[in-house]
Length: 401
Ligand code: LMR
Image 1 (cartoon, rainbow, N blue to C red):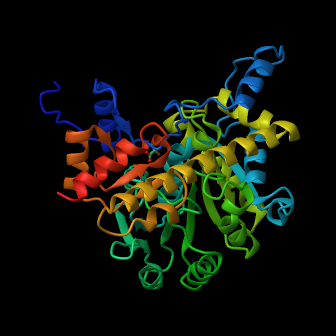
Image 2: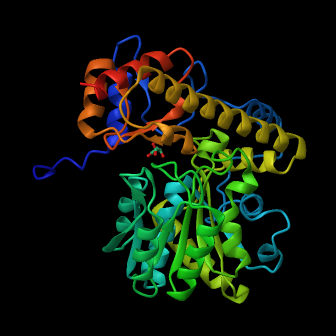
């Protein structure tokens, strides 16, 4: 018994986090896991979260019963409105419903299982690069045919839009296409509005199925509406889609596993059947989702004053990240570090896809205790005014060796 069990494939972001935590070096810098950090290098519980937690703690009507299998309906309604806008025609026409799931990952997982096992789709396209977990989630959801479409041009360090269009144009009809609506992880590089429209054209022409994963709404531009532009555009064009929504990053509720799978379909008569299939899937994996995070988000989204406070927090986060990007680029430029570092300030969201090689990342870790992912992805939130000089000098030294 158990003799033949081998180690599971290591999960890099976990290893980086554990190594960082175990490192006793005082000046260590954590640019690894995609989580927000304050100027003091700490996780941030936003002030409105404390307010809501107090309200919930004193609400005698709340209990700890199970949520329904598909979660809290008020929460999914609020989440859908956040995604598609308060006056979304698609919502008003009854074409949209939501399933509360375990943050972005859980939503991608149940969606994959539905698309594979119920809809019988065969092929999924994911961008190169993408969130490292996408491949795992779709394959464990049942897909064996996972293909890649070009997204990133390593030379120019920008979106490879021609490559993307070429690959999606050649995709077999009825393929699923995983898309990041904003703050692409790991490249920090998003298509423009015009480019999104072109992507939508191809998706329609080729009869592909768009599967959005939005983990950073409000954290790319600082504006929740702008960051949802692509998804809203697809809805406006009447293109059916799935969208996995996470509240981990934009509400700082990482451990609460708070997410929604927004589903838009053009025939509302189908909704009850689709829901019944999702009930079977959710029930067979985790039964029902956790309630606390959904309560916190619902209370905030339903209260105009708290929602404004949240938006202020989003702007504060994005502004701090922008300052850190600027600070890093300015320092590298001042040091004369070879190469162009413009991409650091051009990219948006948490990450900079630095262009550093695996070897350089390894040296940064060994020599300077600066931690990032081996593909060169650096979480800009891990920078602050106290470690910017140190980090820039470390990168300079590694690059000029
Ligand atoms: C990340 O990309 O670092 C985060 O989304 C955390 C994770 O679990 O991958």
